[in-house]
Amino acid sequence: MKPANQLNSQQRWLRPVLIGTGVTLTVLLLVIPLVFIFVAAMSAGLGGLWHNLTEPDMLHAIGLTLFVAGLTVPINLVFGTLIAWCVTRFTFPGRRLLLTLIDIPFAVSPVVAGLLYLLLYGANGPFANLLDQYDLQLMFAWPGLVMVTVFVSCPFVVRELVPLMSTLGTEQEEAAVLLGASGWKVFWDITLPNIRWALLYGVILTNARAVGEFGAVSVVSGTIRGQTNTLPLHIELLQQDYNTAGAFIAAAILTLIAIATLVVKAFLQWKLSRESS
Amino acid sequence: MLGSVANRSKRVLPGFTISLGSSLFFISLVILLPITGLVVQTAQLSWAEYWAIISDPRVVASYKVTASAALVASIFNLFFGLLMAWILTRYRFPGRVLLDGLMDLPFALPTAVAGLTLAAIFSTQGWLGQYLALWDIKVSYTWLGIVLAMIFTSVPFVVRTVQPVLEEFGPEYEEAAATLGSSPFQTFFRIIFPEIKPALLTGTALAFTRSLGEFGAVIFIAGNLPWQTEVTSLMIFIRLQEFDYAAAAAIASVVLLASLLLLFIINGIQQRYQHITGGLK
Image (cartoon, rainbow over all chains, first blue to last red; front, top):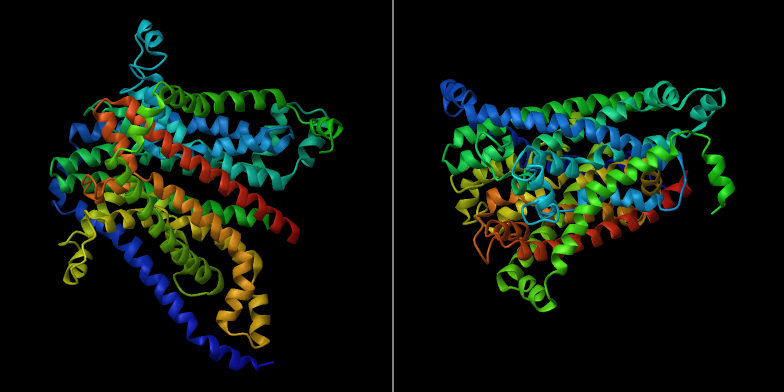
């Protein structure tokens, strides 16, 4: 056995080297880009910032992005909770398969995701006649944007809830049922208070992805200015217009949402760890 | 399997029919039906046509660009993610919490923002690109730019899969090994590595899968030159813009098959891994 102080000296050089390398790489890879976004957004000055922010296409893109996220999040919240309830509260054949299937959107390339919907609901798809009959256009219109966004962001809520609900077990809920509580009451009074932070965490992640989705949305959007152009797509249009400052202003708005997401996430993780201990 | 008795006793809780019903409805409508649509569309092609599309030299060049960049990016993230997971769990230093939070930035930041920003920073006049240009290294609008974009977007995978395992494992074993005279490298390869191997493998495979499909970040920085810096996702996009839906579907079927295969492999590793940690508890 070696004395403790000799042990420390042996490893003393390792600690600063590892921390130094990790911090340097993080600064180069993550911090500098983050700072650059805001510097570039301010490159046209306050006047340029105001001009770009109040431009009708920019305002429409912001509004459409919020609208799409506003529809996507509740859909994935409700179905995500139902799926999590189903796979953690009951055992049935095919349970594991169900969990693998819900992971598919994370594995699939966003462009492929968009294409899947375009093939199915587009002008050449199997439902083209039916949709025509009722004069419904899903692709290259807002419903298509919502559909692909639901697809790409649907695993988040499930993924946050399943591990927690499996760990929590079902004793409390079963006791409530045996005491005569209705299903809804059990969920509302017993389950929800236990899972609320994880649920909110799932919602935050769903929202971040819904707001920022690019690949899937660009396939089904057609990027019609002032109509089907979401904020991430607007970045590309502005860049193609050589309006670099404008592109970075749009990017900075999305970055602020991302930073807010990270802050709320850190808060929720702190809450979760405090409640579980 | 304990059989139907166990199943029935589990179903004290209400909502089995409605939750299973709505789960199946949602998964069928949102995930399975669109995939079937792709299969049907692809099946309309003859084998010869299908093969001609997916083995078109320009498309094959895009497979090579995508796979090689994704491989390099995930190997980088294997080491970087391990390093970050290690310093975040084993050392206490000022700014650690901030550093920990920053690791999630690539997931929170839209990919288009990442691509736009990296392309500007690493261009030959950019904040970092100008120094690399001194050594004649060009990042933006080259294959290296694709690698960089893929590295950025998949940073959190390895960190976030390895970190909980290192936290659970605790430093006691390393301290014991060191006390018994093992060098830091011996300790790492004999004690720590076997324990984190499944998580490391899962994280790297997830990063690789994500990189294969990455589009938003990549197209801003890749330059998108045919044969040189076109990724496969972009090939699908280009075929769509040419209204060649059949070709887009055929190439997409290759990508989809590759990602589903990877997903099943990852789930396989995770199940084995759950089994191992389950034994520890």
